[in-house]
Length: 277
Image 1: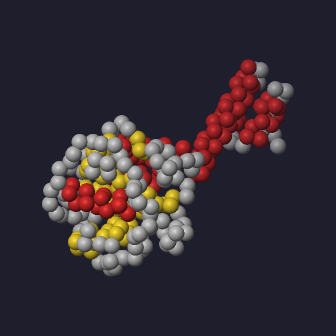
Image 2 (image 1 turned 135 degrees about the vertical axis):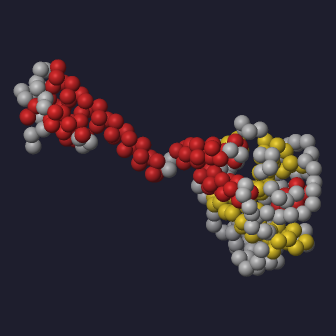
């Protein structure tokens, strides 16, 4: 969502900090809201009412790309969410643009776990606005907070130590226990690289559909190799092969059948004996 308030300047990059508070300790429950979820666009940040307006392009497009890439990289046991409303403090109840949190129920609170990683997409709103949110999220216990700045594309991480946004190099990666594989910063800044990053993440995670495709491709390759070997063996032995027989052999994808045909090709006196039942 887009917000419109006043300006704030970026400081020099500094080291990323860790949360000083345990999630849920001394805070309201994450679902004990000050506003009505899915009924109003209102949020509350530091006691101030904010209206989270629908976004325009390119903010909305960046938001979609962020969710797309993040979902593919999440580790087992974690969930991703967009616009997840969270009670971050006594006077703060707002949503990050995208986040990662542990699956299941937090035994300390009896409700969902607090976000561990949060992302904000910054376009129309000022840096002061997203900084205020970062301070509130960190105080609540969110471990890492990132901001994608749309107008001059860059990804930054909030540093509690320096209280500033630290720019991340486009060629660097985000590594975290919440992520199954490192997340390329460039994939969050360039839509052309997003598909590649998602594909690489799914392959690294052993996605069943991709494994099936790889297995099918491997089987197809083996079948083609055996079929070509049969035809070559017959030619070397001087056994005539008609176009229909050649096509039948080369189009066959049954590895067991091809194995039988290959054994027959070593002894057969004619091509008809190869494909006979």
